[in-house]
Figure 1 (cartoon, one colour):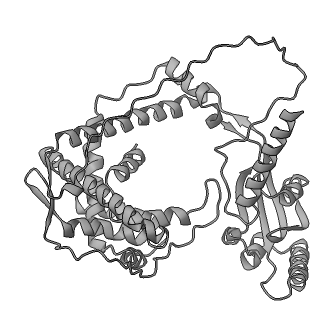
Figure 2 (cartoon, one colour; figure 1 turned 180 degrees about the horizontal axis):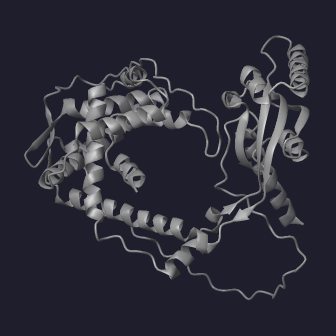
Figure 3 (cartoon, rainbow, N blue to C red; figure 1 turned 180 degrees about the vertical axis):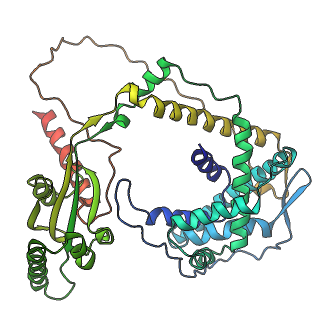
Amino acid sequence: MRLLISVLAVMVIGTLSQAFAADANTAAPAPETKVAPAKPVAPAEIVIETNEPVVDPNAVVLAIGDTKVTEGQLAKILAPRMKQMAGRVPANMMGQYKQQMRKQAMEQTIIETMLNEKEKAANITVSQAELDEQINKQIAQQNLTLDDFKSLLKGYGVDFSEYQENMKKRAMFEKLMESQFVGKIKEPNDAEVKAYYEQNAQQFTTPESIHAKHILIRPADGNDPNKAKLEAKAKAQELLAKVKAGAEFETVAKENSACPSAKEGGDLGVQPKGTFVPEFEKAADALKPGEMSDVVETQFGYHIIKLVERLDANTTSLENAKGKIAAELGDKQKEQIVMDYIQNLKSEAKVNFTNEADKFDLNPPKPPVAAPPVRKAEPKAEVKADANAPKEIKADANAPKTTSEAVKTPAEEKAEKKAAKAKKKADKKK
């Protein structure tokens, strides 16, 4: 439950550590993999050149009731976001992007000011011990020291004290929302649970999977790729002989593998069939648990694969899924309560903008939903289904992707989709 509220807090409160969070997510491994996350690296100092006139940091941008917000306060929120996007947004679009970010920063400030008033009225506080616990947990999750963490924040133009202040806002918001949930969360009935189960069947199905480990030897970069490939293959064969002679697979992987999974002894975790490139998949399919392959060549280099276990496809029954479904439906109710609460805050806010150009509607009307076009039904000839026809097998969209050096590349997946589309088009012409 606290995880959901934390996620919603990030949605509502655009913390100054937002840029850090983005990099931390990128560094983390895909679900189900056991590859250790790399330490996030602070960006190099970036200077954003601009021809915009110098603004007075004390100039008032807007007022929320009696609370005044200055250009300097707004700039503090904008700085890390602009730094994060420098180099990612085309130069000719940076002005438009900055205007959009400025509007978001103003909206964030309005919401935070209103939340602050509500928290004071409800006597909500966060102790230093509670704050330290949350911050230490986040630092530990990123596998960083406190000094590393401070340096990372500094790279984004965020002082550690600012980060602490924003974490405190987040913790206060979580407590405020907890008080809003009391007596409002309805326990789902059996019909609602069953409907959710049927509508989200994929969520309760585990595809056929394999648990494998591997050692990857990549050809070295150089002017002679053929020579590099021969040397890499010879190295892989030498390591294979070493393991067959009794050396521990995991130790050899840690010391020699070029895959990020080397830190975990080459362990790729449990992955659905179809996750790996064809050559790797075919070799793994031929193994029994505990067996090891010969040297296998893929586009990534040369692999030695060890199969740990093979898992059959499995579907969680409705009875066993009830607890998870009830929690999911409860979280959806909480999410709606939070969104409604924030919307009401924005409706209550009495905001005065200094500049006409900064004005925007805090409660824009929702666009009308267009009715679907009515088409005249055409008579169709009755078509009887062939009971012996093969059924279409759909890919699991939620299947986890591994960060290992044995996965299909985006280019390969794109090529497969293109080929499937062309085949479908050709079939229609027949």
